[in-house]
Length: 306
Image 1 (cartoon, one colour):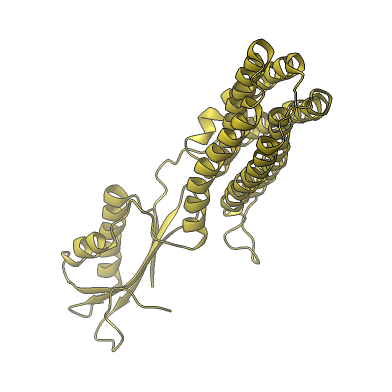
Image 2: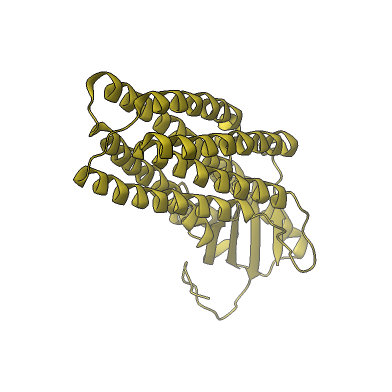
């Protein structure tokens, strides 16, 4: 069986930088959460309490992201041949799920407050929302770069970004309540925050689920790949194909290739190298595992259920 690995410069977040930024964000969000819980109870603001709940979910999510980031750097072993490379994908899935759960809780609370409106101490809401904007805004800047290439960091980044936006919404609500006594704005903003959380959480949940379920990445056209490989001499048929994404950096392909003639091993190695180069440069696949065959009686279907 031919097995090829292409190691063409991937972009990895620096582990110390990423870990340090996550720890700073965890510390800041813990302070915000405690302040908003106290402030929400004193002021009677549901929007502030909902923001505190979201912040608390952020703290838990950031801790999950930090642990996953740490585990993903650990080396493979005899019992863990892939190491912990999927830890960050699992963290992204968990964080996306918590976004949606928190959103559902907020919707329930907002509906109850619409039914029974309450007066809110707006001054405290305004000052605490400003604290949330500053702290979350700083955390967002810390994680923005790493979020572009890493699903786990993106999940943490989205938690913080939505929290910053939620604090902006709470600030607007506080100002409207202070100067215009529009107390219905408080649950209305809570509802808007919740809907936005569901929108963002669903996309991330879907993407992380696709990776965990070993689905073919959306950007890859399996039939086109098979067609390109089949054009190469002396390949007769490409079948039993599986393509999956292990993590952000690795896309794997395994396939059986039926050859027109009985090749020497050195000839097969030369063809395998050509296949690896084509798959990497044309399709971004960097781990290739090929089983060569000649005259073998097995299914020649492109997709075969194992």
